[in-house]
Image (cartoon, rainbow, N blue to C red; front, side, top):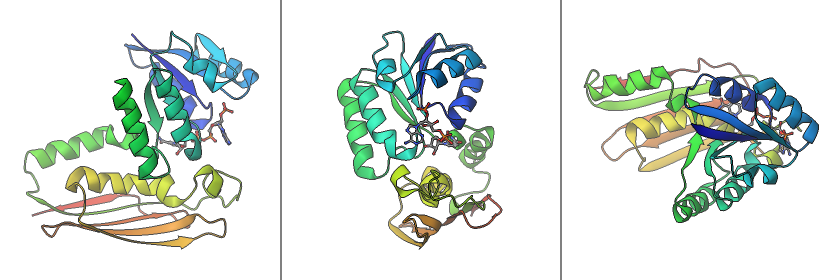
Length: 240
Ligand SMILES: NC(=O)c1ccc[n+]([C@@H]2O[C@H](COP(=O)([O-])OP(=O)(O)OC[C@H]3O[C@@H](n4cnc5c(N)ncnc54)[C@H](OP(=O)(O)O)[C@@H]3O)[C@@H](O)[C@H]2O)c1
């Protein structure tokens, strides 16, 4: 049995705790919030064995094997480093961190401690992605030549909410742009050239981001994320 601990008991933590119950080899050992009352109530609702009023207390719990980090974006780096330092395996919500330099340090720490570390990017594991990989593997569309993908919805423009607040790691790229971006990396690998432009909100984060990726053998990806309007939120993968 793998014993999970969850820190940051917001919306996605609740979804994760619900789904954990479906797995026969996983159990919710402990949960931690910044407040004891919230941790107790979440633990009761999701049948967690232990609850803590600080993240640090959960990191110190010897009964926890893996920590699932569900805090806002700007805390991922710090929370991951602390959990790894405490000897825990880590699954961290997307985006993994705020930039590549932070992610490199996280990976180095996990390697040095011989611990498992993974970004919790749910679309990597959904049946549709598994099917796409299977079809591409079988050569059904030939060689993949391009990816066009988008993710967009009109977000509430609350300057204090995590989507538009720069200090919480907001912005369309970090919140939803990573989904189309991850898909092109999964199917086409690392691009040779990246061209991107953004519409900036007054809070200092991007409300819209358009990305074009070019690959050495002519493959391309055109990607978009936006908080300004509803877009089809689909991916079109073209093959030879
Ligand atoms: N995989 C997905 O589909 C998906 C979907 C939505 C979000 N996410 C990711 O999951 C993370 C959390 O998103 P969410 O929608 O669950 O957010 P949320 O409802 O705001 O929950 C975040 C939790 O983090 C904790 N926290 C610690 N410091 C905080 C601060 N300064 N401000 C606000 N909260 C703070 C709080 O828990 P305590 O009070 O218990 O400490 C809060 O409830 C984000 O990184 C987001 O990108 C992933």
